[in-house]
Image: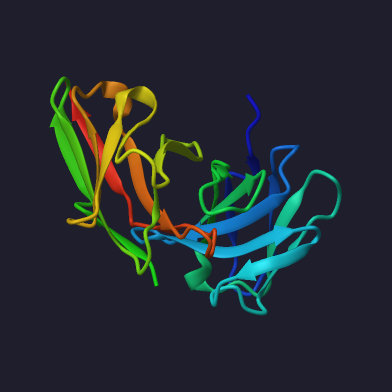
Amino acid sequence: EPEVTQTPSHQVTQMGQEVILRCVPISNHLYFYWYRQILGQKVEFLVSFYNNEISEKSEIFDDQFSVERPDGSNFTLKIRSTKLEDSAMYFCASSERSSGSDEQFFGPGTRLTVL
Amino acid sequence: AQSVTQLGSHVSVSEGALVLLRCNYSSSVPPYLFWYVQYPNQGLQLLLKYTSAATLVKGINGFEAEFKKSETSFHLTKPSAHMSDAAEYFCAVSHPGGSYIPTFGRGTSLIVHP
Protein backbone atom coordinates (compact mmCIF):
# COMPACT_ATOMS: atom_id res chain seq x y z
CA GLU A 1 0.00 0.00 0.00
CA PRO A 2 1.44 3.39 -0.91
CA GLU A 3 2.56 5.53 1.99
CA VAL A 4 4.19 8.83 2.77
CA THR A 5 7.73 8.50 4.06
CA GLN A 6 9.80 10.99 6.01
CA THR A 7 13.48 11.21 6.83
CA PRO A 8 15.12 11.43 9.23
CA SER A 9 12.90 10.06 11.98
CA HIS A 10 14.77 12.16 14.53
CA GLN A 11 16.93 15.20 13.97
CA VAL A 12 18.97 16.90 16.66
CA THR A 13 20.47 20.28 15.88
CA GLN A 14 22.05 23.23 17.60
CA MET A 15 20.19 26.50 17.88
CA GLY A 16 20.91 28.70 14.90
CA GLN A 17 21.62 25.86 12.53
CA GLU A 18 19.63 25.09 9.40
CA VAL A 19 17.76 21.81 9.00
CA ILE A 20 16.07 20.18 6.05
CA LEU A 21 13.29 17.72 6.67
CA ARG A 22 12.50 15.40 3.81
CA CYS A 23 9.31 13.78 2.66
CA VAL A 24 8.36 11.49 -0.19
CA PRO A 25 4.61 11.88 -0.85
CA ILE A 26 2.46 9.22 -2.46
CA SER A 27 3.39 9.18 -6.12
CA ASN A 28 0.08 10.14 -7.76
CA HIS A 29 -0.78 12.83 -5.22
CA LEU A 30 -0.69 16.46 -6.27
CA TYR A 31 -1.10 18.33 -2.99
CA PHE A 32 1.47 18.36 -0.24
CA TYR A 33 1.42 19.67 3.30
CA TRP A 34 3.56 20.22 6.35
CA TYR A 35 2.20 20.21 9.89
CA ARG A 36 3.92 20.38 13.22
CA GLN A 37 3.04 19.27 16.72
CA ILE A 38 4.84 20.74 19.69
CA LEU A 39 4.85 18.25 22.54
CA GLY A 40 1.52 18.25 24.31
CA GLN A 41 -0.07 20.70 21.90
CA LYS A 42 -2.26 20.54 18.82
CA VAL A 43 -1.24 19.46 15.38
CA GLU A 44 -0.81 22.77 13.55
CA PHE A 45 -0.91 23.44 9.83
CA LEU A 46 2.19 25.07 8.38
CA VAL A 47 1.91 25.11 4.60
CA SER A 48 0.34 23.50 1.57
CA PHE A 49 1.97 23.15 -1.83
CA TYR A 50 0.58 22.52 -5.28
CA ASN A 51 1.94 22.85 -8.78
CA ASN A 52 5.34 23.90 -7.47
CA GLU A 53 4.12 26.77 -5.39
CA ILE A 54 2.72 27.49 -1.96
CA SER A 55 -1.08 27.47 -2.06
CA GLU A 56 -1.74 28.31 1.57
CA LYS A 57 0.34 28.99 4.66
CA SER A 58 -0.30 29.70 8.29
CA GLU A 59 1.06 32.57 10.35
CA ILE A 60 3.58 30.13 11.79
CA PHE A 61 5.17 29.73 8.37
CA ASP A 62 7.30 32.87 8.34
CA ASP A 63 10.52 33.72 6.52
CA GLN A 64 12.37 31.20 8.63
CA PHE A 65 10.64 28.41 6.74
CA SER A 66 10.68 27.38 3.10
CA VAL A 67 9.45 24.42 1.10
CA GLU A 68 10.65 22.93 -2.10
CA ARG A 69 9.99 20.06 -4.43
CA PRO A 70 13.52 19.62 -5.76
CA ASP A 71 12.70 16.68 -7.97
CA GLY A 72 9.73 14.53 -8.94
CA SER A 73 9.52 12.68 -5.65
CA ASN A 74 10.85 14.67 -2.70
CA PHE A 75 9.14 17.48 -0.79
CA THR A 76 11.30 19.31 1.71
CA LEU A 77 10.85 21.71 4.60
CA LYS A 78 13.82 23.92 5.38
CA ILE A 79 14.07 25.69 8.69
CA ARG A 80 16.74 28.37 8.78
CA SER A 81 18.40 29.51 12.00
CA THR A 82 16.52 27.10 14.24
CA LYS A 83 15.22 28.23 17.60
CA LEU A 84 14.50 26.24 20.74
CA GLU A 85 10.78 26.66 20.13
CA ASP A 86 11.08 24.92 16.76
CA SER A 87 11.46 21.64 18.64
CA ALA A 88 8.44 19.61 17.58
CA MET A 89 7.24 16.66 15.55
CA TYR A 90 6.91 17.64 11.90
CA PHE A 91 4.45 15.73 9.75
CA CYS A 92 4.30 15.68 5.99
CA ALA A 93 1.04 14.79 4.24
CA SER A 94 -0.24 14.43 0.70
CA SER A 95 -3.59 14.17 -1.02
CA GLU A 96 -4.95 13.63 -4.50
CA ARG A 97 -7.15 16.71 -4.37
CA SER A 98 -7.70 19.61 -2.04
CA SER A 99 -11.40 19.54 -1.22
CA GLY A 100 -12.40 19.76 2.43
CA SER A 101 -13.42 16.11 2.56
CA ASP A 102 -10.41 14.57 0.90
CA GLU A 103 -8.22 12.37 3.00
CA GLN A 104 -4.71 13.56 3.63
CA PHE A 105 -2.21 10.75 4.02
CA PHE A 106 0.38 11.45 6.69
CA GLY A 107 3.94 10.34 7.10
CA PRO A 108 5.32 9.04 10.42
CA GLY A 109 6.88 12.38 11.28
CA THR A 110 10.32 13.77 12.02
CA ARG A 111 11.05 14.66 15.60
CA LEU A 112 13.18 17.80 15.61
CA THR A 113 15.08 18.63 18.76
CA VAL A 114 16.82 21.99 18.92
CA LEU A 115 19.44 22.30 21.66
CA ALA B 1 -13.17 30.14 12.58
CA GLN B 2 -13.24 26.45 13.32
CA SER B 3 -11.86 24.48 16.23
CA VAL B 4 -12.11 21.18 18.01
CA THR B 5 -11.77 20.31 21.67
CA GLN B 6 -10.85 16.82 22.76
CA LEU B 7 -11.81 16.20 26.34
CA GLY B 8 -9.19 14.22 28.18
CA SER B 9 -5.60 13.94 27.09
CA HIS B 10 -5.56 10.34 28.29
CA VAL B 11 -8.31 7.73 28.43
CA SER B 12 -7.69 4.39 30.08
CA VAL B 13 -9.92 1.34 29.53
CA SER B 14 -9.74 -2.36 30.15
CA GLU B 15 -9.57 -4.78 27.26
CA GLY B 16 -13.13 -5.60 26.20
CA ALA B 17 -14.59 -2.41 27.65
CA LEU B 18 -16.33 0.36 25.75
CA VAL B 19 -14.11 3.02 24.24
CA LEU B 20 -15.44 6.59 24.24
CA LEU B 21 -13.24 9.45 23.04
CA ARG B 22 -14.87 12.85 23.13
CA CYS B 23 -14.67 15.60 20.54
CA ASN B 24 -16.61 18.84 20.42
CA TYR B 25 -16.32 21.22 17.51
CA SER B 26 -16.92 24.85 16.84
CA SER B 27 -17.78 25.91 13.32
CA SER B 28 -19.72 28.72 11.72
CA VAL B 29 -20.97 26.43 8.93
CA PRO B 30 -21.84 22.73 8.82
CA PRO B 31 -18.46 21.06 9.09
CA TYR B 32 -16.62 18.08 7.82
CA LEU B 33 -15.29 16.06 10.77
CA PHE B 34 -12.55 13.48 10.96
CA TRP B 35 -10.95 11.09 13.39
CA TYR B 36 -7.34 10.12 12.83
CA VAL B 37 -5.32 7.52 14.73
CA GLN B 38 -1.57 7.48 15.22
CA TYR B 39 0.08 4.25 16.27
CA PRO B 40 3.58 4.45 17.75
CA ASN B 41 6.21 5.47 15.19
CA GLN B 42 3.63 5.78 12.43
CA GLY B 43 1.83 8.63 10.69
CA LEU B 44 -1.73 9.76 11.25
CA GLN B 45 -4.21 7.37 9.63
CA LEU B 46 -7.80 8.27 8.83
CA LEU B 47 -10.27 6.26 10.93
CA LEU B 48 -13.47 7.80 9.64
CA LYS B 49 -14.99 11.03 8.39
CA TYR B 50 -18.34 12.82 8.39
CA THR B 51 -19.20 14.77 5.27
CA SER B 52 -22.89 15.62 5.78
CA ALA B 53 -24.35 12.27 4.77
CA ALA B 54 -25.34 9.77 7.48
CA THR B 55 -24.82 11.11 10.99
CA LEU B 56 -23.54 7.76 12.24
CA VAL B 57 -20.26 7.06 10.54
CA LYS B 58 -18.53 3.70 10.62
CA GLY B 59 -14.79 3.50 10.24
CA ILE B 60 -12.01 1.00 10.27
CA ASN B 61 -11.16 -1.38 13.11
CA GLY B 62 -14.71 -1.36 14.52
CA PHE B 63 -14.78 2.36 15.39
CA GLU B 64 -17.73 4.60 14.75
CA ALA B 65 -18.69 8.18 15.48
CA GLU B 66 -21.96 10.05 15.59
CA PHE B 67 -22.39 13.63 14.44
CA LYS B 68 -24.72 15.46 16.84
CA LYS B 69 -25.38 18.97 15.67
CA SER B 70 -27.38 19.93 18.77
CA GLU B 71 -24.43 19.00 20.97
CA THR B 72 -21.72 20.08 18.48
CA SER B 73 -20.12 16.73 19.14
CA PHE B 74 -18.47 13.96 17.17
CA HIS B 75 -17.50 11.39 19.78
CA LEU B 76 -15.63 8.25 18.77
CA THR B 77 -16.73 4.89 20.14
CA LYS B 78 -15.88 1.23 19.93
CA PRO B 79 -17.91 -1.41 21.78
CA SER B 80 -14.97 -3.55 22.88
CA ALA B 81 -11.39 -2.36 23.22
CA HIS B 82 -8.47 -4.44 22.00
CA MET B 83 -4.90 -4.07 23.15
CA SER B 84 -4.04 -3.09 19.59
CA ASP B 85 -6.26 0.00 19.88
CA ALA B 86 -3.72 1.68 22.15
CA ALA B 87 -2.71 4.78 20.20
CA GLU B 88 -3.12 8.54 19.93
CA TYR B 89 -6.44 9.70 18.48
CA PHE B 90 -6.99 13.07 16.83
CA CYS B 91 -10.26 14.76 16.00
CA ALA B 92 -10.22 17.33 13.17
CA VAL B 93 -12.64 19.70 11.45
CA SER B 94 -12.66 21.34 8.03
CA HIS B 95 -15.12 23.41 6.04
CA PRO B 96 -16.92 22.33 2.89
CA GLY B 97 -16.29 24.95 0.28
CA GLY B 98 -13.80 26.75 2.44
CA SER B 99 -10.29 26.01 3.52
CA TYR B 100 -9.55 22.38 2.99
CA ILE B 101 -6.96 22.49 5.74
CA PRO B 102 -8.22 20.54 8.76
CA THR B 103 -7.94 21.99 12.23
CA PHE B 104 -6.83 19.34 14.70
CA GLY B 105 -7.45 18.81 18.36
CA ARG B 106 -4.69 18.12 20.85
CA GLY B 107 -5.18 14.39 20.70
CA THR B 108 -6.27 11.77 23.21
CA SER B 109 -4.01 8.93 24.18
CA LEU B 110 -5.96 5.67 24.55
CA ILE B 111 -4.46 3.24 27.03
CA VAL B 112 -5.80 -0.31 27.07
CA HIS B 113 -5.18 -2.49 30.11
CA PRO B 114 -5.24 -6.30 29.91
